[in-house]
Length: 258
Image 1 (cartoon, rainbow, N blue to C red):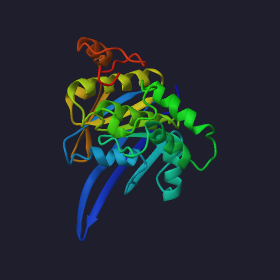
Image 2: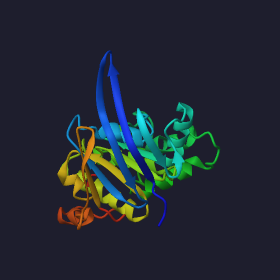
Image 3: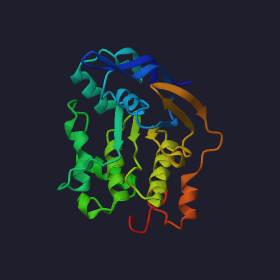
Image 4: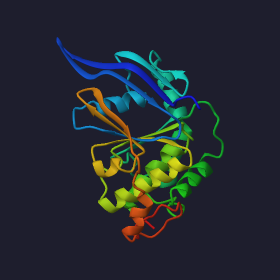
């Protein structure tokens, strides 16, 4: 069996406000293996966003250990964490976080330009290929204002994929989308997962978690429940049931997004 993508043990996160201590995480243990599609669920204040930030190397634990793809993360400097994020992680956020007066292909190209290793050549073509991979090969030069919400999220997913990350982290990726477009985006995540990409999705929506292979419930800074889903829903089937036209990835796209 391949080594885990994520191994965290005894992870705690304490925020200090004067003399007050706020425990966001209270000793979390978690292992994620290559090729998993995992949903992390929890209400506001449960600790799920703190957990996501630590997994994404955007924050560091107060205590405990974290190994990402065989690399010990806890104790790294800020610069080393930034390099690790660029090499190993892809991020998708609820708000898309696209530069407004920049084309789709330029938005996707940005992580390649920030890489300090010099490993990426022909960055524009790599960005274009990532957009084609998510069904937006005809929208390369469109700015965000010229794209629907679903298309903007596809651009964000292409940007997350362009560096060929070990792990894709999505924080409420359907939070700004209508129900049909949400299913379309989940179909895309499932298709990418079937291609071998490990995906973790943070969500508070049970309708979104039902597409994952494994669901973790977080409450009061602890993992309350960690269970496999026996028969995850197939988002592509739901897309077809909604009478959405197939797109280039074979996952479905609304007529507006086609």
